[in-house]
Every structure is written in C-alpha cells, then in structure tokens.
Image 1 (tube, rainbow over the protein chains, first blue to last red):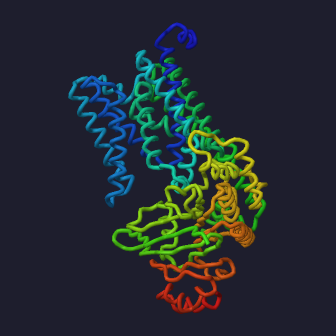
Image 2: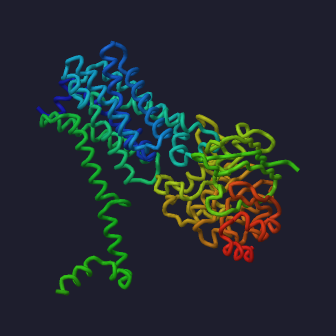
Image 3: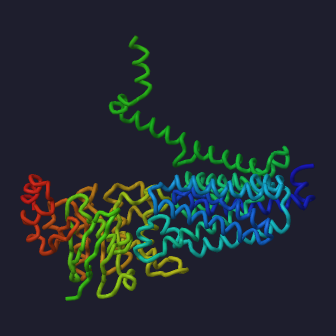
Length: 304
Length: 247
C-alpha cells in the first residue's frame, strides 16, 4: 500500500497530517519573531515550562490550555523578574527557571504513575492524535495566525526597533508577554506532534532557514510557514513508511532543509559566499596573496 | 515664544550613581540644539529619560506644554546606530514606512499613501535610489540618512537624535545637518546629542553643556567658552584647551 492510499484509507493519518500541517505553519510563523528578537533560548524555556501546567490540568481535570498558559507565562515573568532585579544575567535566569519548571512537571506526572503519558507529552506521537486534540490545534492555530495578522505592524516595529516603538508609546513589555502567551499556545498545540522537548526545533529551524533565504520579514514568515509545512508532511511520510518516531523525523527533515539552505542559499549560502570571496581574491591578487591560506600553506611546506 | 520642551529637576541613577542629576532646561520652539559633554556625561541618558525610555528617579517633562503621555506622537526619536540590528530582514523603504506607524494607530495597515510619504522622505535625504536595498548593505552615513528619513515620516514637532554623526562620511554629515536646519527653519525643534566639539557652533543655534548636571544652556558661541568647557570636561584640561580653540 502506498502512502497516498494509506492517507485516503486511514482516518488517523488524515488527522495526523492536518494537525502537523497546522503545527508546522504556526511554529514557523511565531518562530520568525522569536529568532529575530534573539529569544531562541526563551522559546526553548517556555516550551519546557508548560509541563507542570499540563500535568496539573491532567490531575485536577481542567482544561489543558489554561494550565499550560498559566505555567508558561508564570515562568516567563519569573525569568524577567530575576534578570531585572538581581545581578543574574538573562540566559542564566532562563536556565534556572525553566529547568525548575520542567522538573516540577516531571514530578507531578510521575506522581500519577502513567509513564506512557509523560513519554507522549515529551516526544509527541502524532500518529495517535485524538479528534479533540486535532481541534484544539486547529483552533489555536487560527487564533495565533489571526493575532499575528492583526498585530503585525506592532510586532514588526517592536521587534526591529523596540526603542522607537516605546518612544512613540507602544506597550513593548505587554507585546513581549503577548508573544510569550502565543508561544505557550503554540507549544500546547505542538504537544502531540513533536512534543515539548523538540518543539523548539520547529520554532527555530524553519525560521532560521527562512532567514537565510530572504531580506523581508513578510517573505521570511511565508517561507518559514511553508518550510514548517513541508517538514511536517515529509516527516510524517517517512515516519509512517519506515516506522520512525514521528516528532523526531519531522525535526530531522526540517534540519535537512536548513543545511541545504545554509549551503545553497543564493545570497547567504556558504558555497556562494565562498565563490564570491575567491573571485574577490583573484581580482585583487596583491591584497589577497598575504591573506590566502593556500599560499601560507605552500610557504610552510617549503620552509623545512 | 512657545516652549517646545521643558525639563524640570530630572534625575536618573544607576545603582546609586547619578547618570543625570537634577537637570532642568527649557527650550523654545524652532531651535536646533546640540547636547554636548564628555563621554559618560549622560547625554544619551538625558534624551532617553525625556522620553521615559529609562526610568527616572524624579522630575517632570513637558512637550509643547503638555505631559509626555499626551504628546508622544509629536516626538520623533532617532537611536544610535549601534542599537540597531542591521541584519534584520527589512529594506530601506519599509524602514521609513515604520515612521508612519505612530499616526496610523492600532489595526490600520500602511498602504499606498504611507509608501508614497516614505518615498518622499527618502527623496529628501537623497536615498530614493536605495529604496529596495536591505539596510545592512548601506554605509554608515546612508543608514543614518535612512533613519532620519524615518523620523521625517513621523511628521513630528520635536526631533531627538542620538549621536547621528558618529562614524559617517562627510557627505552624509552635510546632508543630515542641512535637513536638520531646514526642519528648524520650518519651525520644528531639533535636539542632537553630539560629542565632537568642532563645528558645534557652526551646526547649532543653542548648546546644552552637560556633565551629569546641566552646566550651561545658551547661544552656542557663548557656551563654547573655555571656562564653561573646562568645568564640563574636568580632568581633561589640556584636551579642553585644544577644543576651545576649535570651537
């Protein structure tokens, strides 16, 4: 049976594709703002920090989203508070706070003695996604995309030049915590697909790949969404066909796309840049000779 | 004459040390004012405290007779070049369009009208041919002109520029000072943080001499006397004399 036949045949595969498509898109979109704000580590932290909230929601039987947003935001505020009110630097504060939240989450979940649940939350299993989880993902996705569309202008200016944004009266701190809220929502939406541990890869990698491919934010967002989507689809295909862990396969596919862009990007690619440098050296042989590592090596070989 | 900016007893401190101490100054509209003083004298801090970008210990700021909260949209701020991420995926035109945001308000998106206005501002600083370039591909002077164009697009009454002449070419410097003077001639008020004393009298109508405290505010040529400068640049005495000559 081919993959396409299986998709038509099996309900679970359709759900998996739909869910992971949405996750790929929203992670890519929100990831662009995360990496441009220099918050890759913060993305990792917040995604881990939803764990205690998720665990408590399971234990006490209230909605997963409320718990996750609460613990994610609480951690974000705690990180900000510690780095602003003590001599502890921001990255150190992140390291202390999110590991604490994560550890607390693990303790809470193991208290319930269901290790399968923990495994699924940490690493995801999109091929076993339940209908209500798919709907949660789709609703969150729509909400996140609508927010980004509505506040695009404010997100752009506060990301690019926060000082100017604050100078003309934008509430930049509020925008930061708004983005953190969206980030916790995206993490919850990604629980089933890639899981807490790997969601940061879906946030960062497609956005980083897109960053290598364009010089405009709007185009970068489209690229990141597209790359997230492609990684999700091909990851599920490979995962289904070769029976691999779905989350990890999606992430590896995404990494492969990143490496391709890193080598081949027309403006930023390593190969193209290397060629340009070499051409420049040829154009200015006198200046180039001193710096040329090939020449230096020749001299070294001759000298003994 | 109307007061464009009024600062009363403004103090800013970091970890118990004053960066700006008890600064009071009142600036009439339609002047081009330089803020000069030695390194670490609190020049940039003063600008940022005026805009409440950093918290101040106490003090009051009024812009055009109104408190800052009611007049933010009449102020354009140009940050130091070192504060900008020049690798950000944005081109020159879109950067200038950001200047139209304050007057757009929430939920409105910039359209053709805003892009036209931005292009016009680019023309004024002589950068219209670079509209589609990524900002990192420009020289320092060109980058500074683009940010001035963005401030022009804000259509403000008060312009605050932090070290606009650092690390830029002579051509850009002349272009920028020319535009600042034309803004002044149009009745706008312009404050420029400037660390190079040469040309200070040539560029500015008034000078604020600051070293934590505001030591002098007045007509540029008068502020530029060796006596006042010596006090500001305390400890740099030989250097000061040289600069006094250049002034």
